[in-house]
Image (cartoon, rainbow, N blue to C red; front, side, top):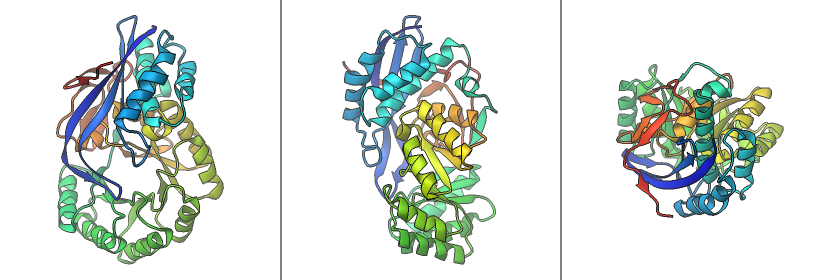
Length: 365
């Protein structure tokens, strides 16, 4: 099976409700889709969202990185040589992790098709289903409470609450949501780098003093501030999770050395794809650190890949935050994994199992 062509498209899907964090507000998914074609007629699918405030990737940078650097290095290559292909992708240019992830996902999809097996089985096996939380976006307290109650009514037992805009208001937000769903759902806070270390400690102590038990707090301080992260970790009871502070294995090694966090959030778009995601999970497991599998605002294409990795590394990836497709008004992907609110299941179709993508706009070469 030889790679013959790489085509790009734009996929636009409206969100059910605006996605608001301390960093941005988004109203619809607008992702670049990668389709890697082969001489056998098989097609591998990948996807990359523009997340300029986190990874630095924009639509333009993703397209240019793939067209001018990654694709030329892959045309004519054999899919069977997976390890070499991942090294070619990662070495094609610096940074541009989302572009690399999109192409690597498509190559792994083809590799699964080549071996006529679902990707998770080739990566290590596991039970082909996971349970995800649901994100509650930053908003007015009444709206956030209503969204939380609605999520619990739909069967979600873990809620990821976005905070970080104003620590005093954040405390009231969390207390109100806890009161509305206590005993029915656990709460995970995501500050999206919105607090200083001291603000985080004060806010988390106030939340704990109010009787609110949190499952974790995610990225309470700026990504580069590992000392601040350690300051928080050493002074609060709630487990601290690193997100933007860990893009790949190198950052994880430094985090482990400093003992700066308790949990690590793996995202394919941060680390450049599946190969590095597996390295992060394996390295974290060696040091007794749990991981979450997360995503950006992605559809069922790249989230399917994340699910396969999470299933194959379930001993380490104990928490799932793959609600991107659930935030969309509809699922444009035929085949792949099945999303039924909090329950995500994987078929035994080869690779990612994607049969087609509706409403995909082809990008001219």
